[in-house]
Image (cartoon, rainbow, N blue to C red; front, side, top):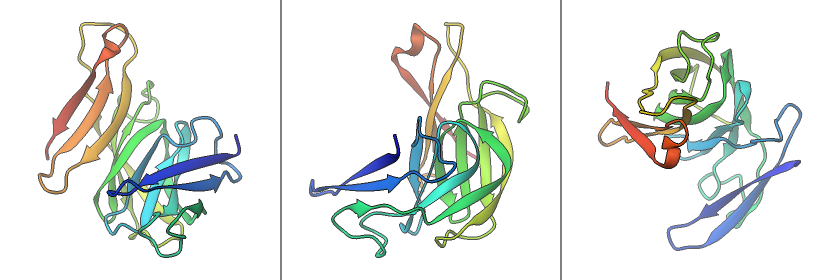
Length: 187
């Protein structure tokens, strides 16, 4: 696989394909673990399900005027350069113009105090289509509760700007993994 596609569906039902040609250092397997949109609507941030030292920044289809409105090429605009390795980010969402909260499906505790960490990523400045450095802070271990024993899978995060609630999705070990548990966290 040398490309990844992002399909955009408008509220009216129109669908447009945007295709990104993978560049040097972009992982081919699991090339798009999640995508989030910056608060100003101009940028997409995503990364692979892999150990990463950067997140990828793309112009937001339909919202950023540098892209054609009916699909086409999706160029890499910049990177969020992480000061510390993050293993298997499964979801990030903006809580401000310069702060992301991310859920990591990291089963180890060699990078952070716990496995399955909830992380805060503080950007040096707002996204502008160029590289930006970022500080990574461990916040907590994600909830791991189940009657089944084994490996949990972190599925992602969603921040509600109206309520201030952060929802985190975690799948329990098999055979209890038929349902995704959604935890709501508040500051």
